[in-house]
Image (tube, rainbow, N blue to C red):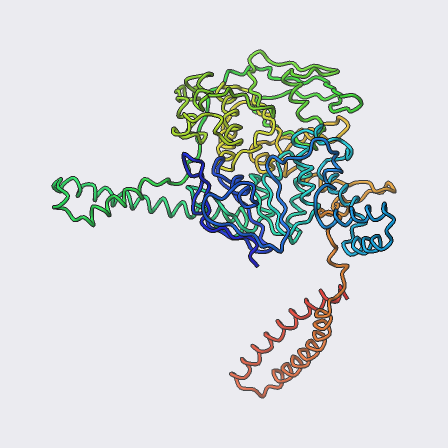
Length: 625
């Protein structure tokens, strides 16, 4: 069943088309990821699909008999309502049934109340508030009476995500759902979306999330849409193979173009004396040859400020806000080449630790001693620092004209911008025309161009596209200084860090040797105590990743059709066993010819396969029965 169809759609920005002639569809049950570089139009495309902005070309149709839920990248929530009021304000079947029940109760209308109760019973909406609080809790929202206007931007996005999930739409469209979520919450959402039967279209740059949730990839590139069936890992394999083919094709084009160019130069200049068809073919070949080739990887090693023997020492630091302790007696002495990731739930103090180290926040106890030669580059989550009317190249050029390389050479700012996916044509664009991810990338460049020898990055992966993440990862891998990173991107963390500070709550920070996957494996293997104080394996006690609102499939009863199938399977298995026994007697009798024995053996193998298949189905149905 086709849930969505888009035919030749386009978005016109006036001076240029953002994209044009895009055609694709989404079938029921598909989980589709939309990927592409920052500024390629992913969020605009989602807005068009749900009718937030007009279609400038083509046509979009979504099935009318399905419910669609949409999580905007920047959701607009009512500032004056509480968290619970915001959730209950949504107009879905459950909330409407509850509201009708409350109205009937207040009016003392027995007939209306009876109808309302029947409706609530049918929808099983009595525990709706419990379900709402469960989902909000999973997403880290526990103060249900707090006004939306008093929440941070990240908290507001989590409330908006909760509202969409609670409505349980048939078709779910999500724009960057993992932004502002901690790692535990991302893994919960990953499990929820991958285990449900919902049809999904999402934009995300979380590569582990893509790989585990999505079964189809749509990529916007070069003003076109490319389709891949399979998860993100399959997409990478196919893209690499396609790029190899493209590279070989381009090489053939260039060789042929060289020969044709010689022919064009040898011939008389008057076009009438040349073959017009061959001239046309030459220009067509020329246009194909200059097409974009495979993306080049960044191979860049920048010169750093000299690093002395003393780097940074954290000495018995503690910090609390009111009664909440976020850092308790934490000490660490940084060593050359340290590459440390910081993980933990939201609100535990990860950013506070960074601000203590950079002396933006004073600790309640202890101190931080920084070596004289240490030059810190700090990328924070705070607002983007750009002036109106600035051009991209001017933002970086006001810091330096050249970037010093490790081999002593100098790289121009223009070339440096190009390596970080700001091509020359974009470098003279105004900053206010950049997408959110492109502005984040530019802010990051302002830090890197100062040649720090100690990099502190607070959520550097937010809003960055996959191409930029690859460039950033390659740069950080070659970075020779110390690195301290807070990120919810597990793929990113696994690739660039080999050591973790884990915020475990109540101010305790675990110093763990290994990357994020190492930590998760270690954590899953740790014994835990149950309510009686007995030690159990954590794998035995691991909570179900799917939320409680999911129906437990094993508890449902057999349908009429399944009951009939179950009864017929028993009869079929009896017949197959009887046929098998008869065939075995024939094979053991010694009376058959060579050809007959071969045919009987083949039949015997087929009967065994049929028995195994039917027994497996019988076991599935017997559990339900």
